[in-house]
Structures are given as C-alpha cells and as structure tokens.
Image 1 (cartoon, helix red, strand yellow):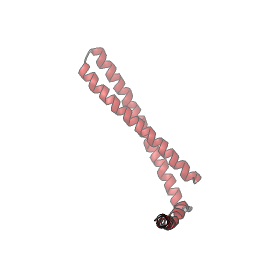
Image 2: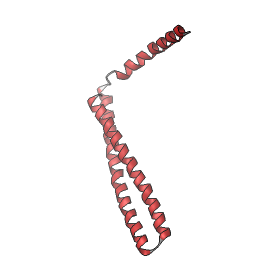
Image 3: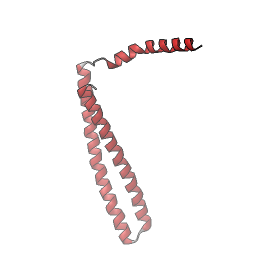
Image 4: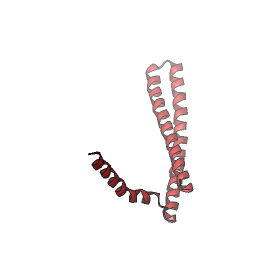
Length: 111
C-alpha cells in the first residue's frame, strides 16, 4: 500500500515538474517591461490614495475634536466612526504599497 502511494506521489511530482520549470523560466523582455510599468503605475496610484486618505484622516480628527468641544456626542461618534474607517483605508493602501514595491523589486531583479 505504501509503495503504491509513493509511486502515485512520484508520478504526481513528475507531472508537475514541467509546470514548475516553466514558472521559473525567464520571461520575454517585452512582457517583463510591461509588468514593471504596471507595477510602477500601481505604486503611483496607491501613493495618490495614501495622500487622499491622510487628508481624510486629518479632516476627521478636526471634526471629532470640534464636535467634542461643542458637546455634540452623537456627531462626534459618527465622525469617530469615519475616522476609524479612513484609518483602515490608509493601512490597507500602505499594505498595497509594500506589496507593489515587492512585486516591482522581484520584476526588476528577477527574484
């Protein structure tokens, strides 16, 4: 029984080997340039989104402070909820930037 399983596992590995080799094969230079352009465009877009998210966070912080000074707790809660959402968006966009930078590095350096 074990021998049958090991033979099946060996055959599965051999059948997957060509796909693994092709995945590691060098890419066509034009396709690689296209991928690099795409990664740089994504990076620029994510940076624009981060700038917008930072503006939103600053605005939300001002709104929460203003509402608390005015004693408007309901509006302060709504603005605090907006602030949490905008901070989440900012963290997500920063994560996207890190991923795009990794992708770009891998495309440029071939790792």
